Image 1 (cartoon, rainbow, N blue to C red):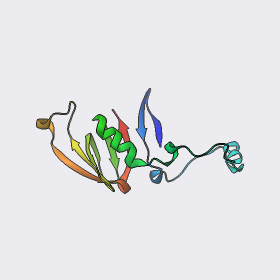
Image 2 (image 1 turned 30 degrees about the vertical axis):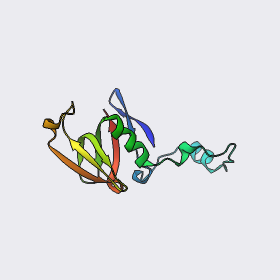
Image 3 (image 1 turned 180 degrees about the horizontal axis):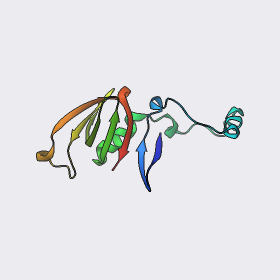
Image 4 (image 1 turned 90 degrees about the horizontal axis):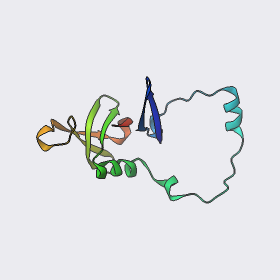
Length: 118
């Protein structure tokens, strides 16, 4: 899920895996609205079927500097590879240069809580 994360007066785009959401706060009105049966008015779009790996592969191709928040750590760098169940993050400060890479961190999809775009 693509979202905007507000940090003080600044807004940052981020990717939030649906399995990372543990609770949602709703007002009573929002709760009533969510109980109304939704009837599909159009055929499902291909974008509705794209998962986390698709989005992460796009960030990898674009060499975007990201911050990956996982169960036990937070790393900043670029995604070097996207596997079936994990990503390889080259940990470094910007800009991406091979001499600046401190380590390659493997992060399992199941452990990813948030990916912030820099």
